[in-house]
Length: 287
Image (cartoon, rainbow, N blue to C red; front, side):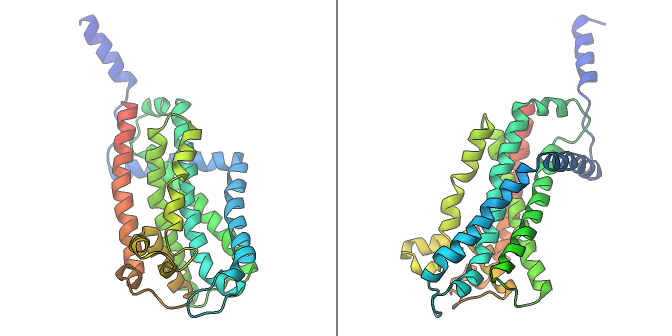
């Protein structure tokens, strides 16, 4: 056997072939997810600071600006506005988790964790799937705490528990979809600091050019079309309907009249596109 053949054989032994099949991928993803969840419990600052921002948004918007913002067909009051506001705060919270996902993946890349995973016989997509699953669990916990804070400041669910759970399901689906955007960002930048900035800078116009904090009818006409077809707006409107928090008239735009359907379609499309792009980027980075 030649030296080159022996070298190639040795490399082949050092680089195990990843396991195939959906069952293996799910198992590997859950193993990676547990690793990330354990890391969150050992560094509780990650969870604590992730909770502080949405809680501050609730308090500031409801007590500082709530009495000054009038929803069409209602009188300006903080109690009315908190009913209108909370669906937007919930949606903003699940999408802002993108920054944490992108920074976490960028940090793993910098620390050489990708190289260590390459040496294991595991599905290549499991690293990203496990990370997004762990982020989904953290997002669910954040939503629970945020809902309790909202109840304390006067927010209420008016259409029953099942519909409310459906609304939270839509929120988690949107958050999971956006976590794949965060994964792609984390794989595309060179540092966790850059990943955090890149993960947030585009989210501010996305969330504010929507129906989250003010009625779309208050925006200039050319901007209203953008807001109506914003995936963020569809989820917010669907949650308001499911929570029974519809304040003022429903916009006649098609996405707002079929908000739940549009929300699911947007989440599925975003997940499909960005999970494919992320796995492709990960394989090229690990190749």
